[in-house]
Image 1 (cartoon, rainbow, N blue to C red):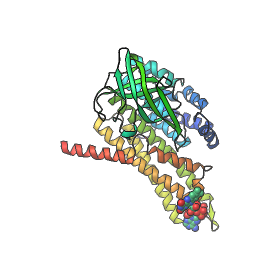
Image 2: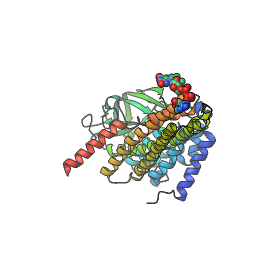
Image 3: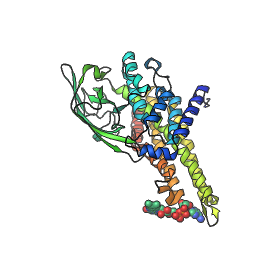
Image 4: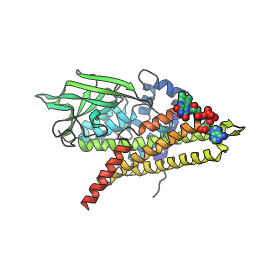
Length: 383
Ligand SMILES: Cc1cc2nc3c(=O)[nH]c(=O)nc-3n(C[C@H](O)[C@H](O)[C@H](O)COP(=O)(O)OP(=O)(O)OC[C@H]3O[C@@H](n4cnc5c(N)ncnc54)[C@H](O)[C@@H]3O)c2cc1C
């Protein structure tokens, strides 16, 4: 199999690397993270101008029809720069969800402002009691004469504090943990009855807990058929998993490079500490973990179009293993840097925090290992 990039993919990579290098040095990134909004509108607009916000959307919806490889190229570059702009929440999760569930014309109408950078969406799907299970939905949508009334609370909605529009997953039928009966609604983030409690996450990103009390929406707010949102939700989360794994690969690459440089620079007993074989072995283990993550990410990205059972197994395996390998690299980097690795002023501490947090988005290692176990047992019982 040919793993090298096509000309288009290489151009995309060069473009992402260039904008991250130009706009996202460590100082600029710190200023963006510590700003009130928690992201840069200028950088976001630049992403839009370069076409990066169009990458994963179908051509029918005004996108570039990018597949897993293109998503991987963009997210890996963002991982190298620790980019905090709401790409995962608005473009990958909310955007590809809309693309998957809405009829062509409606999808194009909603996605066009995402691609232009004018409107930022987020996908409000998870709830506290459901942990990482996207099908655990207690939020209800009650049909009324002119539309629906929504009630419920969504937890850790990525960029939920600054998004303009929410895609809210609510139950119109079915048991609390059932994929059947889930519906999706476009809700103005500032609508009456919507309360947002925003907060920074430990990796410099932002999220919000969102409560909906008697929020009324019109019938046009419903995306797709009532009760049929589950497969689009899977579609979007699968793309989110590929983006997160890719971002981990980019961040781990830089974490390895920074650590190697530190081992060469830091002197103890008159020699660089990297001359000690015990530390060389640990550095090699970090590189091995990085290579494993690169391979798994490529495998996951190439599996997006595979048959459902195969895709689900591969994505869960990749997410679980990336979580484990990422934690190893983050912890080893902190150990090898000694106390310096703990400092806010030291870039490695921010890479470590992002890498560790990636394990906690869209299902952590334990969640995906349990899913893998269940899928394996179900496959064995069926055989
Ligand atoms: C806020 C804060 C909280 C901390 N909390 C804890 C804590 O709870 N528990 C804890 O254990 N530590 C903690 N540390 C880390 C600890 O204080 C030291 O930073 C750490 O033990 C590294 O020691 P050092 O200063 O000698 O590092 P450096 O001399 O800078 O050494 C860097 C790395 O190289 C290794 N090294 C140096 N020389 C050699 C050599 N000759 N041979 C082999 N390896 C070598 C060191 O072990 C270290 O991994 C904390 C640090 C900070 C800043």
